[in-house]
Image (cartoon, rainbow, N blue to C red; front, side, top):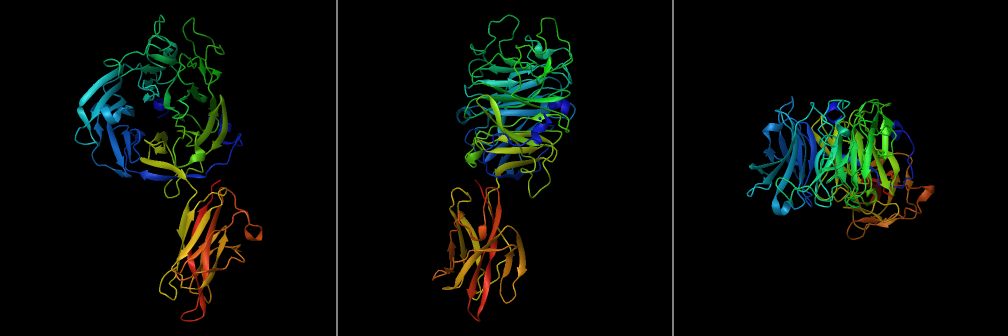
Length: 525
C-alpha cells in the first residue's frame, strides 16, 4: 500500500510545544462493513451523511445517520478490480445544492487516472445518475501507482487536483521536475468556466514557455490528502516520502508557483537522484521546504494527511490539524500559526476507540458538511468520529428504595473546570429525606451493609461535608458542587475523571438508608 499511497520520529516522543489546554478526545465508531474505504466527504452543510469511496469495488457508499445504505450512491465499473482499478477520492461542487455535481477520481483497470463528473439523481438524493458522466481529465500513468489525492475545491471556487509523480518508486524519469507533464503537480482548473474546464488566467505559469498552464505548484511525489483550512484558506498538502522522510507542506492563500523539491529533495534533505541538466541542485532556494517533516526510524513510512478542525462541537480544538502514518498507525496533531508549527501532539493513545479494536491502516481522515472530523480505518472497513471525551457516563446499579423506585443520578450544566457550572441531580428519592453526595477518582460496586444500596465508588471517598440536602416534595437531591472549593484538599483538573454518587436516608418501612447509581464525569478545561 505504501507505493500506492505511499513524522522526524521525535514528533511522537517530544513534549508538547507551546501547548494550551484542550478538551480530551476520543473516537466513536460511526459505521463498519465497508469494503476497503479510502475517503469520505459530504456536501456543505450536511451533518447527517457521509459519502465514502471504496478502493476496489468502484462504489461510493452512503452513510446516513450512522446507517450504511444498501444501494451505492454511485458505481464506477472502471474503478473496480484489485489489480489496477482503484477508487481514490471525490469532491462535491460548492454549489452542489443547486447543480448536483460530484467529482470522482480513480485509476481505471484499463489504465490511466481519471477525473469525472456525475450529477445526483433528480428523484433520489442518495443516488447519482450513472448516465450523467462527463470526463474532466485523463492521464496515462507511467507506472502503476503514485496517482495522488485527486480533487478538492478551493475557497476561490477553483478545483485543485493533486497528482503524484506517476511512478511506482523514486520517480526515475524525474517527472515531478518536468513542467511539461501533469505528474507530480498540483493543478488548478476552472470547471465552471469551460468544457470540460478552463485554465484560470491567474495561474502562475500561464504563458510561461515549457510549463503546462494548469499547474499551480510542482515538485510532489504522491500527495496523499490535501485540504483547505476553512478559516484561513491555507492549503495543507501531505506528501508521502520515498526512503527516509515524510513531509507536510502548507500553501498560503492564493499563492502558487512553488516547487516543493521532489525528486531532487526528499523533505528538506537531498535525494540521490539525477534529474535533467538545468534542474536546481539540492539546497537551492528555488525549492520550498516543508513546514513539518519526520523520518522513518520508529516504523513510520507513509503520511496520511488530514484536516484542520473547524467544527462547532469542540471549540478549543479549532485550528488543530490532524494527520497520521499509515505504517505505524500513529496519529498526530499540530497548529500552524504565523508560519510556525506549534502545539505538536501525539494523539495515538487518546484517539483509540474504547469499544472496538485499535485504529490501524489509517488511510484517510474525513470532514463532514459542518466541519466535524472522522478517521477511516481502511483494513477493517470502519469510520470513527473524533469527539470530546468530556462526557458523563451513568454506571452501577440503583436498588429500589421504600417507594419501590430506584434513585438515579444524572449530570447537567457544564463539564468545564473553568466554567464551574456542573449540576448533579438524583431523582426518585423518597420525599422529605436528607442526603448528600460522595465523589472519588475510582469506581466500584460493593453492597453496603445495613443499606439497600451499593457503593459505586472506590477509595478514597470524598464527602461534601456540610452540604446536606433535602429531597423535598419532589423527591430530588439537586447539588451544584463548587469545583474551586472542594473538601479535603481535593483538586479537579481538566482531563480528570471523577465519579459521583448520592446517599440518602430511607425511613420507611424501617430506619435505613439507600444510594443512587453512579455517574462518571470527565472534565474539560
